[in-house]
Length: 268
Length: 252
Image (tube, rainbow over all chains, first blue to last red; front, side, top):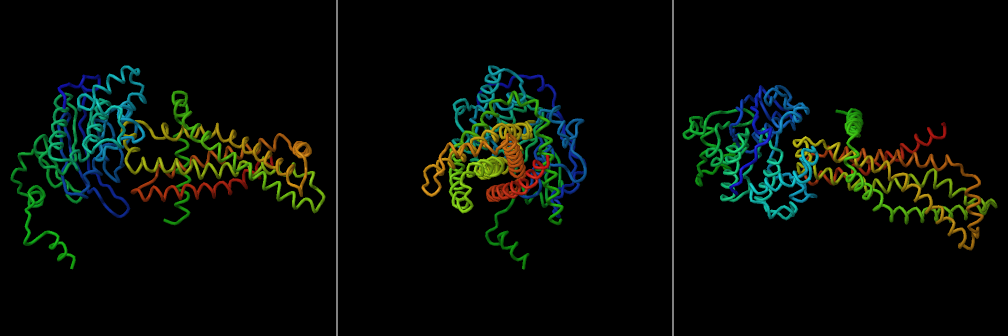
């Protein structure tokens, strides 16, 4: 990452906390979230961890306003996350797991889309803003490339750059280090921490990555089977007392009695 | 949930999409580039196939009617028959079917793919309503391009019929007689009714294809399923609407 700092914008001074209050989400007969409550303070890095299929991404989508709770509510500051009007009041950006870049647009146009659509500045201003975001993530040379020409790690960096152009007050990351090699994972972890440091943006990170969460999170929540299993500072989970969280954080590879055999036996 | 509830749900969803898209109508002037791009994709790129198909439809119509009408000694009315049939029925319907197959399927595939790969979610979080950026320019483009395509289809069909009448030995109606008959019994309303029909078909096709694309859930397999669903639904709607719009126009 380059040494550039993110320019202060009128929005950056104001960050929002998030309150998830008794949220339950059902898809048909399946209950994905079961009475989930959380509080994320303004300016903190909050990591949501848990096994695959536990409802982490669905919870993140509720915070982004992409899903509406079956019951309960999510508030960003004083605003209802499910209300489309909230997006006019809060600059919210979501970095999707697979990037969700617009494949028909170049990297530059992917980043320029938001300021162009919202007519926030003229084309010269947009160029300056886009190139600055690209420089923060050392992506200047990729400006004219298309998403299909990029590696997985570059796509994620472009997705983060696109989020930065929005000058977010709330930045959500969905599995930012999945499918990346350890060096790239470490790089992205540093990027998330540095961005918070430079912009004081509230960051919510959904991840499996224990190293990422324990390195940068102010607080961590564990979601298991649609419920919150525990919330606390990373230090609180160095030696977890909850056996389920302990098993998730420190799985023991036992070749003599492998887990999949246990699962097979339990189905019989 | 029974089928009726599902169908009512889809009709409601489609109308809601229309209302949400029309809400952004004032933004259309600043989406001019996007609108022109859609005009190019819907209109210009469909032109060759519309031209070829309608030319041969007019030709076949003249050939068939020439064969049948000779028995009644009514060959001089072939021009009237081809003219009216192309303008009132086959022109708009054939263009609509082509648009459903060629443009509608492409729109559904594009939007479904954007939905499956979370690009639509990305737009939503960026506070860029997909109705404004993806649906409205397409609806505006079809409103402009559909009458143009229908007029071109009519002209090609009429000239196709004229050529067949002139150069087919068994028919032998020269172009002058053919066009005289075509003009003699055709009113301006025959053409405008056809254009209204084309407009209605085109608008409904694009709206339905956008709705199905934006409501795709699942993976790549569902993209294909959505395209099939969009084309089949469009074809059914074209023929069902054809009856009702024709009846309404005849009554008026």
